[in-house]
Image 1 (cartoon, rainbow, N blue to C red):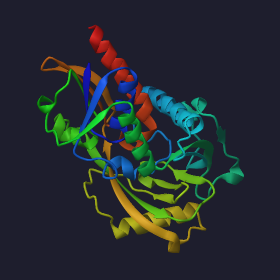
Image 2 (image 1 turned 135 degrees about the vertical axis):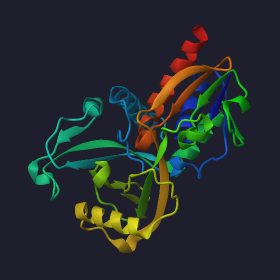
Image 3 (image 1 turned 180 degrees about the vertical axis):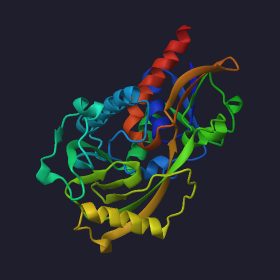
Image 4 (image 1 turned 60 degrees about the vertical axis):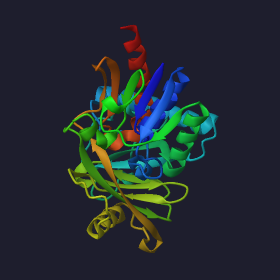
Length: 313
């Protein structure tokens, strides 16, 4: 059975791999490939962020956590590393639902909480170097027999295949007329300085993060809803640096080496469901917000389940 996947970001490639492993023939259609996808600019530290409904996204993120660790440990994917990170909060709250599903989670001692905050926790989670990881995903997809066709697709009617999987991200606004998909603009800074451990404030209004990778540390961020601007703004750079310096006073601005912008494909909730369109099954997998990488493998597994289910009905 032939499956056409629309989109070659982290969701499209992960889904394509899982479908190939399940025995399907898979062709990805896309107008952009790495390094020109939104996924290439992802920070990307495993953390469920801006994604609903939580009863599903917690499960998908836990499944993705396990797969990222497996890829690192069993398959030697060295662009995935485990790093400690501390999230700071203004007031005490319940631990997140996914906290029992990861290998390291602890509440911070009061002496470990950053100034201006009263509570927090520490986790150890995968950090993914996205330009390298995207290359690895594409190579794995093609090694399994998948094909990639570079062309813009404007509607499902233009797509061949017995089944279509829609991983168009922000493009879903046009591809399937879903105006509930809106951009949440994220600007980041790259700096050649290691903070030792990540520091995070994950509230959209005060979003701050320092994500240490092997090559650089990613500083962020912004979560500008409805903002389509893909160019970097100097005022946002200054805003990000000021926030990061409050959590990491040792930050050295002379070590900054770059700035990037990506548009997160936000939606009131992830759309992961199947429907019949002109006699074919279409499975939608988009609207992951700021958690595309974090949800990628769990959502890919769900797509395979929905495809198989459609074949029995």
